[in-house]
Length: 108
Image (cartoon, rainbow, N blue to C red):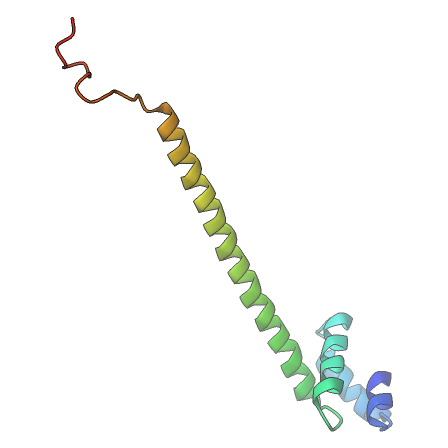
């Protein structure tokens, strides 16, 4: 919270610090630091607890979306690789018989 005090030129009282701590304690230090840094970049005034929580939750949502996209991408890449391998393998294993020269072409 020292960063907020310095950035906004406003001292955090013990009471205010207790309120912030109570509501932010479920989050990790890196999550809170990320929200504080974002508030410093984007907010003109000292951020409320609600603003910091909103920033943390938006970051969580963004991560979930990025992770979901990565899973989808990875599955598609694996599927393409697998399908491509099957096609190549099938082509290699297929017997090539010229037209008119198959087993029913009349050769004895």
